[in-house]
Length: 339
Ligand code: NAD
Ligand code: DAU
Image (tube, rainbow, N blue to C red; front, side):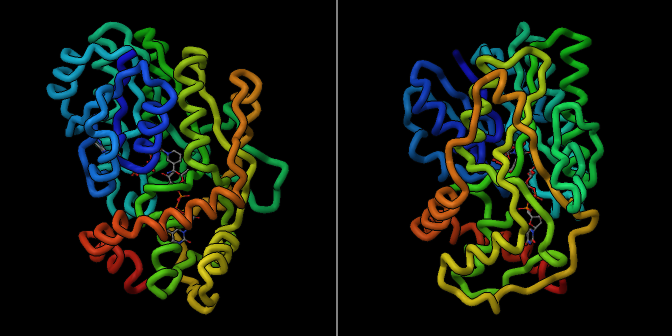
């Protein structure tokens, strides 16, 4: 198979490319990525010379470019990881989220139609379901939970999901959607909770916890997500949605304390700051469908995965230090300077 993986220079996409080249040496992977602030070509350095791999710098909204690439590569499958992915940035400026996450997804699906029913997989998020109350631990997101978004980011992802549904129904495009909970692991951009707390801790900088730190996220090791997407694109039912999550709910403050202790720093670094606008309270996935239909279960326990992740950041300062000294400095000042 020839598989176009969009957004492969980002966090989950790069982990997915490493996974696929290792697990499916018979497949050819073409990575299409615009290299926005969140994309990093150095992440893909170990595979750039791989005979079954090609990197193309391109915007998924560039219709002519995308059609040209499809003409050249004639892919069997497209997996769309490309997105603007950070909720806080979407609150500052939604426009690029609408452009990439909605328009970009439609361009990719138009190309799939034009070149003959190419299978299309949309990597979506549990955030399309909105949030769950903190005092109802019995409630979980299922694939039937209504879409009810809170942020411009999640709304743009929900818009894309609806378009995928429409393309399947209207044009018969062979599509699938997966909605995963929060990922953690190597190569996550330093603006997200876990890497941000790790590198701030290492620099003895304040650890900015939004509100009271009581919001709950359902954490999954990135490789478990990659394995689930691989299963969905090979064995998932056309037109189906699959939730992905490992029943691993944690309060933000507990994650931050765990990182502080692992790195041998003081809890005095923890600083409570103004809450995120519209902050979702709790995410929790019911993964029964993907387990029953495709046999997927997470393999990495949080206690192991988080230690592995912290060690990775300790051993790969050469990856994240150049990032946090560039444009990120202004971003950090704008978001956290007066918070
Ligand atoms: P990321 O921000 O780390 O990476 C996004 C990648 O997409 C970058 O390489 C960037 O250069 C590329 N990109 C952005 N705009 C583009 C465009 N217009 N054209 C081409 N490439 C473009 O994101 P991530 O955390 O790896 O998330 C990947 C996908 O998974 C996203 O669709 C996100 O919504 C979804 N998701 C993420 C999580 C999570 O916890 N990180 C959980 C569930 C779902
Ligand atoms: O649930 C899946 C989603 O998970 C993905 O769709 C998104 O792309 C991904 O970014 C992530 O969204 P979150 O908003 O949950 O992740 P983030 O790392 O930004 O924040 C996690 C929690 O930590 C959230 O409750 C906000 C809080 N937080 C975050 C940051 C960056 C803080 O308290 N302080 C911070 O500095």
